[in-house]
Amino acid sequence: MTEEFWNERESLQRIRDYARERLAGPWAVLGVVMLRAIANTPPNVVIPAMVGTPASLNLFVGFVGPSGHGKGVSDGVGRRYWTPAAAVPEFPVGSGEGLAAAFQPDDEGTPELEAAIFSTSEVDTLKALGERSGTTLFPALRQIAMGEQIGQKNAKAETTRVVRAQTYRACLSVGIQPERAGTLLQDAGGGTPQRFVWLPVSDPHAPDEAIDDIEPLIPEAPGQLVPAPGEDVYAIPFPDVARAAVRQHRLRVLREDPDVDPLDGHALLTRCKVAVALMLIEGRTIVSDDDWRLAGDVLKKSNSVRAGLIEATETAARIANRARALAAAERETVIEDRQVRRAADGILRYLRNHDGPQARSAVRCSIKSNLRVDFDTALTVLVDAGDIAVRDDGQHQKITLTEGGQVLQLPAQGWTGPPLVHP
Image (cartoon, rainbow, N blue to C red; front, side, top):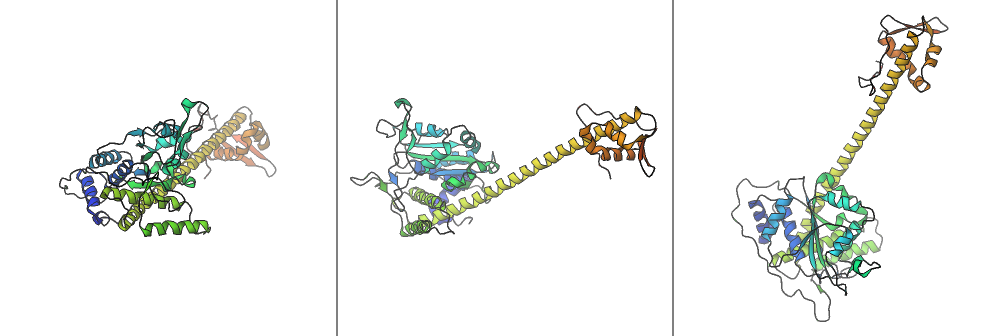
């Protein structure tokens, strides 16, 4: 899938060409536009209750690429292309409690601010926040993705922040460096990666030729996205093919099919959100078969990017483990060489202080007990160096200091020379 996706409809072509005109990654710009289309949709506009209750449209997008490769550029281009009349407030990502605080619910639990985009250009920010003692960030993000009740009830009214379900619209934008993606990927057990759309900031097929000027789009809010009298929410109509896919997956989970991953349900929900975003970009109010199909293409791209990240983080982990193992082995070698050098030093000192050949056992007992394990190695090193001679009379070994033998001084910081290994 290269250009086929973009050529499916004019709205996608325009996004691709607008991105390339400004040297930004088309997939990333599409992600920005989808986020903003969803963020400008009222929180009571929902995905119908295909499983359980109606689901929130709250959308999370990860923009993947090495630092400095264009996340900021793509974000700026997407903003400029999709310019609704009313801009949604944006906030940096904070703690779980801070996310709820952004909406500042009134006494009825209804947020005074009903929509916000949270963002961070570095996924390490999420890691740092997630590692704080008592943090609730990742559980809160999973709740927000589902539009569930967020916040906390405290003893004091002034510190209580509880935002009711389906009363807020929250979208999340995260810059993800491939080698740092483990922060999100390691929370797969909770379903966090499946709640993200993963899109690259690169454009391997960027043309050499400049693109003609493409005008920014000033979207008009689709009409008729209002609840019917007596209803709290407006459920966007979905095609039968989407309902069938969701229903089939849910039945397999209920029947405990061993070949189905329950967390794939989050991926299906994410596909529903993308389908709605593509619908909104077209200015329509009903998700079509094509919206659902194209959303599947977006998720295929997302899955491909995520698979690449998993491979990258596993490779980085292997490299780190190998480096740690080599460092540990090197430390052991240095320690071992130092021990041998100290044992050799002790042997020479003893021989210099005692005239004539000395019994091997006496020489061995003369060095510290913790060095005796290296006695034989040290003896071989000294013989090879010509510093001592070892003679065997058939019953006992005698060790003699040669004319070239001299006391070896150990450097203050330990031996740093070549390994003392007998050939």
